[in-house]
Length: 257
Ligand code: NI
Image (cartoon, rainbow, N blue to C red):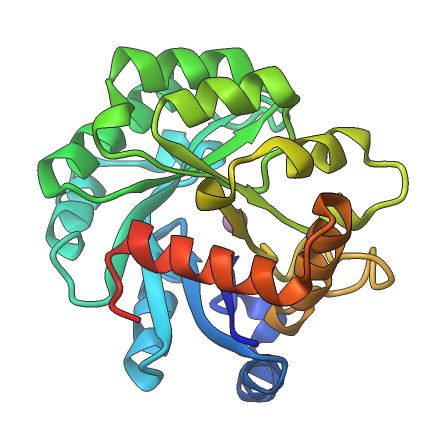
C-alpha cells in the first residue's frame, strides 16, 4: 500500500533532532510521497533543502495568514521566483486565521488575494488554511476566481455545505487527524460525502496527531491511521482509500506516478 501525505511540516524545529528517523518511519509505513509546506522565510528555506535530499519530497511555498503583517514586497517576489522551482508543486499554505490576533483581517485578505493571483500566473494549485474564517475564505476564493487553479482545503473542518461549496470551486478536501477523534462529528460526516476523486489525506505534522496519539507530536507515518478511519467511515478497504488519495494528489500536483 502506498500513501501520499499532502501536508507535512518536517521543516520545523520539532523535527530538528530526528528528521531522518521520522522520514524513514514514514517510508516504512508506506508513505511514498509527501509535500512539505513552508509558510514563512525560514520554513520555506528548510522545506526546499529537505526536498533536495529526497526525491519523493515535494514542496509548497506560501505565507501564513497569522504572519501576514510581516509580508513585504521582497517576499512576494521571492515566492514568484520559487513558483518555478522544480520541486514546488503548490502555493500555500495561505488563507485566513481569525483565531490568532497578530495580523489585521484586511491585511490577511490582501496577502491571501495576492498569493492567489500569483498561483494563477504560474498555474499552480493553492493550499488553504482556514481557522474561524470560513465565510471570508470562501468570499476571497470566489472574488479572486480561485477555481481557475483549484487546490486543497487543508485539514478541512467545515460542514457538508461548505465542503460542497469548495468542491464546486474546484477544490479537493483534505482530512487529517481530527477525523479520527471520537468527538469530531463534522469531519466524519464530510469523510462520507466527498467524491472519491476529490479526497486527500494529510497529517499536518507535528500538529493534530490522530487517535491514539492525540496531543503528542504527529508524524507522516500516522497518515495511515487517517486512511484507515476514512475507509471505515466509507465502508471501503484501506487499500482503496490509499490508492485513490495517492492518485488524486499526483494528479493535482502534476506529479508523474
Ligand atoms: Ni500546515
